[in-house]
Image (tube, rainbow, N blue to C red; front, side):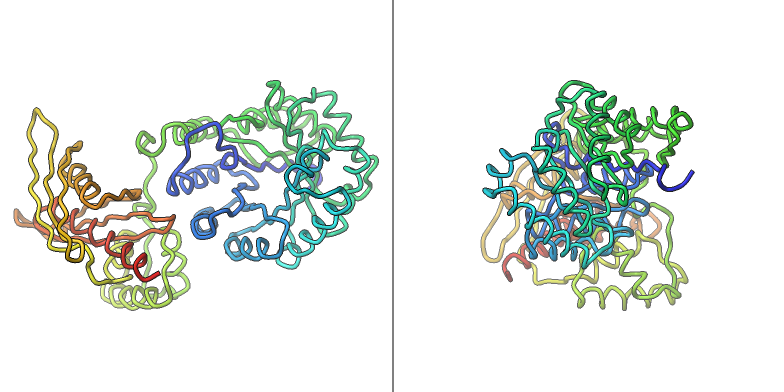
Length: 471
């Protein structure tokens, strides 16, 4: 079978967020890594709305995802195209998407433009995208409710402007499978330009027929489906993949997403989307426990990529410090684990004057009551105090810091390890906090592991505050 028979699967779980609680930065990153294990052709992300956080998320996903292409929509202007490309360009296979409604009601309501003006905006934007990448997709939202003549005109114009994937959407989810088949066949007949590109399809699941319509679309010539690994108002990735694999020979198609691990991975994705990281199954190793090692033979570029995979976005100055320290350690030891690289980053990157300092604490813990922490410290010259309980001494200590500072940050990771032997062994902790999507790590060393954790948390917190006060 040739490429014309390959049905691509584009996972759109991350864009179907209305049906489940808002995910944190870390949860979105973890979701994309899990989806990548399903071996889809593409992972679709949201358009950049918050310039700092969303750009960093796209960069982090682009670095973490090893197999799938990453697709991100742009707005209809040059600034959005350039901003999105800067965030996306390091992906293994980057795709820019131009996604707009093509029904007259939606065009005028959302964009306040008439049909011909919309065509011009779309073709100009597609041309700008093609200047940056060959993989450009045009997505016709609400295509099934658009004027048929206009739809054919805009699809033809999109292909001529450079789109090599064209996706039509039954956004309302109102079509039956036989209507979908007729709709797709009609487009292929009336728009000859579609024969030279990949035709894609998306349907909402309003009538509980999205999967059946997707199969009808494939049988009528569609070769890319937008489906969600976590069932929302979309085509079900696991269901449609199972159908395509079973009927591959009969349909004369192939799909690279297999069914071997799909149930296990999809169940993990569902748990993540509905319950978050707090109840997320812990079978997966963290990035730092992956067993990957680096050596003195690795280039600076390789180390920078490893730093990005760990989730950091370091300045050139901080990267120079990390590289210098890494080189010294690697030369002495021969190899450096990702956990050790994490510690190097926490030690070397962004060392700042301590805004939070002079920390004193008392931790009370017993076998019948929860742990309680009482903490005092200074913020510049201001006295702060926090008293809080928690599920264990570490949790109560961190809660007391939040109470004292009046601020909450996502705790991205907390690592503990011994760095000496014996009863008086020193314990080292690494705490990673996220602020506006950016990762900050702190390091603490003490014979008291709770104290080491508090020191690491305050160290990371000081880095956040320093950037805020310097901005």
